[in-house]
Length: 150
Image 1: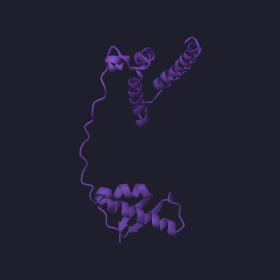
Image 2: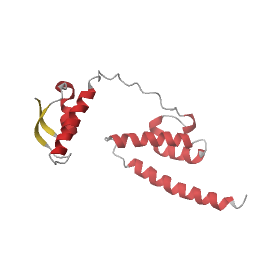
Image 3: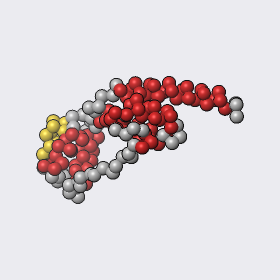
Image 4: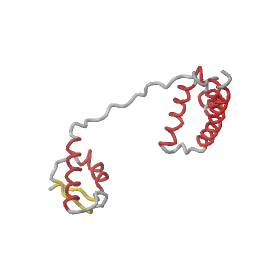
């Protein structure tokens, strides 16, 4: 059993160094971006998963980062995430027409030896789409400034 002590000590030392780096990097995250908002949530979920295995390390990290924000006294009694209510999507039964329009424009660009990232000034579509619903989506997806129907 004594041969495990140096290995455990090395792992804990490496974990401590890594946790210090994670704590410092989380505190510097810009929470205005999606990645900045999602990383702390994902890290908290992973931390809660490790809490039964590494209780003291998980508790120390939890208190250092999330202690005040979560409101729980300990990671071991904190709440698990709740199921998010997602609003029902609108009618997307005609979305395949928008995809067909995107395919049409990409085919045109390939036939004209244009880069798929190249911006077109104007394109007249053969496919019929609902411009009010999907016009901006198609224009942004294939980089067309003005999109019209033939």
